[in-house]
Length: 244
Image (cartoon, rainbow, N blue to C red):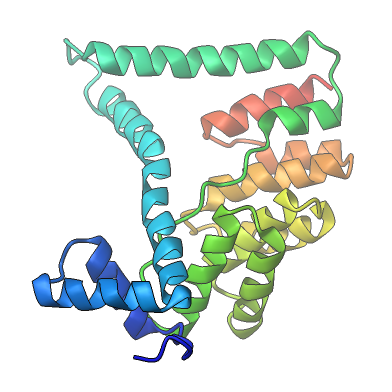
């Protein structure tokens, strides 16, 4: 192996790196893989990036725990003996919402303050390598998680051009543009995403669209977007906008 040769950034290498990170290589394959990392800086960087993406899965764990908690309360309201851990988590969550709302309502509301208090970029998705378009989306997501929003947008815009019905790409283009300080462009994508009412991102789309409208001082439009939402974050945001 010539260390001066550049390692190709393709699906085969991505799957090999996945196997390494998941501990699926046997001793011979592992030795060969580690030698390859030592010889090729580009390949070593690919491993580092893929490992960072896998670790990002942990970012979604808290959301999943909260979803499970609310499901448990909704489905079994009579159930006793909820663990102290669940109670502590729920209490912390409610206190966080309460403090945030209090701070907004008692410090002089403005669209900018409401935006700042409620905007946090979507943590992103773990993406399995598959087709060529999935591969491009995957590396765009790596950029997105690193807050390299320009790079992520540049990777995702061709995917949108080729398939404007892909609700995932449209949604993340909206959020990435909003995080990158481009609320008008964000509004464009999120308005498109809002038309996809069956999307798993529908409530999140309404949240970020309202924030992008708020950035443009379109307060009444932001209220209309959030009307009748059952999402707790959207309910809190609507209350804060109504207080403007």
